[in-house]
Length: 315
Image 1 (spheres, rainbow, N blue to C red):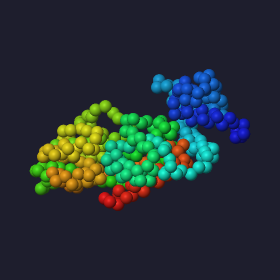
Image 2: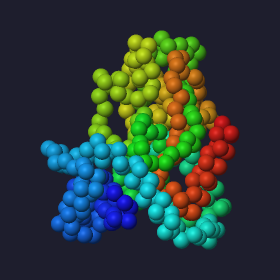
Image 3: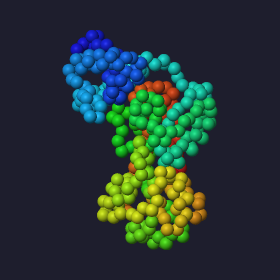
Image 4: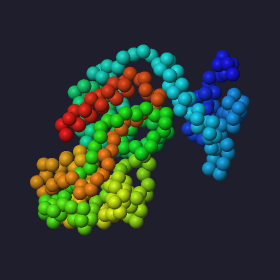
């Protein structure tokens, strides 16, 4: 079909339909009537010679053809947005823009303090609104309501842009009076009691099941690979908490190394390498294609990477 014969608004309809998977909600998002959206879907099905969305017990399910179209559609709409966006440079010294950033507890503990310090000097009137993973959905990010997410992602929508902020390893935090300190082996590690810290992914589940060690994250997966399992006494979702709890002389907190090193000045605590192999991980920054070409957003992304390099260099 020739492009000039297609109403390009239909591509916007399809984009919203694939996000909402519901004709009524998609119509509300675009401020049109439900019959108008239904008619738009009918025309889209004709154009692509595919049902695109099929009714199921869970609502409307995208077809394989629709899922294949979605990343290219997102990119195409992003490119159109760039063409239409005013060609204005961003002046951080003068701007009072608010940026909304989803940051994991790990990112808040390690990266955010240095970022805020730099922002106060570079862009004193800019406002930062930090959100937790449980505050934000991928749909919020996709629609540009959240500027970016800084987290460790197991998976992320294909349409998103992303960049690695840095790599990190794991370390163990112990009270200096812990009997395991002088002879820190796999045996003494397994004999101790442990603090588990959430990897804070997008969407928070309810409660933990200690019996499902293979689902508890990097550390317990690494132990499972060598046929071992640790004795977890405390589950927490905050990286600030283990430093306090680890002052008990029978507990070990296994944390990202940059978090553990934040306690390096605490005379009561000691940081040791794990007595078994744990794979390193990447802290990533991800954002919607809708914001890829936005001048203010490009400035912030560059600043975050610049600050991250300084933090990483400092150890």
